[in-house]
Image (cartoon, rainbow, N blue to C red; front, top):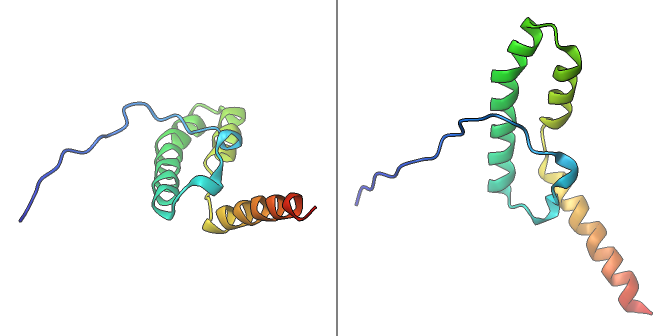
Length: 90
C-alpha cells in the first residue's frame, strides 16, 4: 500500500532555547529532527543577519543552533542514573 501524508512546514524560524531542553528525554529521531530544524534556522536567518551586519544577533543564533550529538543524551542519562543510584545506596 502506498499512502500519501501531508507534512507540516514551519512558517516562523526561531530556534529553541537549548537550556530548556532535557536532552536525556529525546530519542535519536527527535535529535535528528532538532538538528535539521536548527540547521534550517541558521541557513535561512544567518545570511540575512550577516547582510544587515547584526553580529550580536548572529552570535545569539549560532549559540542556539549548535549541533546536538547523541552523546549528549547518553551523558545526561548516565548522570541521572548515577545520581539515582547514589541516593538509593544509602
